[in-house]
Image (tube, rainbow, N blue to C red):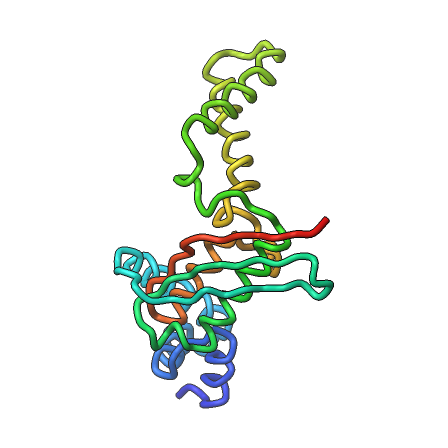
Length: 195
């Protein structure tokens, strides 16, 4: 028999529903950590399934830094107006807008980066590596690695999330999809700064 306090504690940790939390605890023989991991795995699998669903609702959220000289605005889409008005969705919008203000990404995702810019960046990396006199296949692997790192700097969804360095922004959003229960897409953003 699983203790109700343990179920409540797991729900608070993960945001899972009562029955899901109870089932996960039963499967984990009452181990809170294992149950939380099981819920996270199930949630991420559900988030992947929801990725194809249409997002017609959402929210435009503005973040203004305390000194009034830095601000960011994000458009984040979801499936229903009910979720768009939800407190958890609003918190997600705020976190992403704050991240945009702090990290200054240039694009939402790597598919948004113009192909000519990607090719130009590859050529710069090849020129850097050419001085090392390595075999061609090694050079290409190094260039791909440098390119992936560059995408992690310029693409919002691949940047390390400012509030949790163990996650990218994309992983953070995916985690919220699993707890909120709808497909969520970051559509676009703008950042403003008076220097």
